[in-house]
Length: 99
Image 1 (cartoon, rainbow, N blue to C red):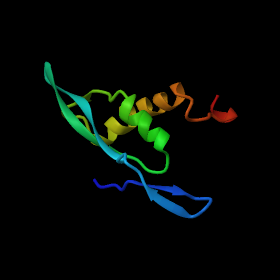
Image 2: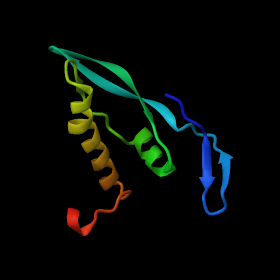
Image 3: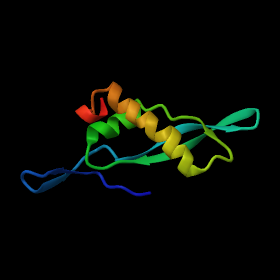
């Protein structure tokens, strides 16, 4: 995975470099049989530096079970934890239809 360190001021059509990368590693616990070990997950983001900060410093990565499909892990565990992070930190705004 690759990413840049650019930020944009869309109102002025300008870009400028930032010191903070938009791709980073997070530890993830891997459950295998009766034990578990820690590995790393690569996460990248675009557009919102605030969402990137929340993911890098506050997101709790759910445990991944060996044998679980990547898709089911993302749909059933990872994305719900990301949505919860967004809600708890007042980043996203729910529409009336979602309440």
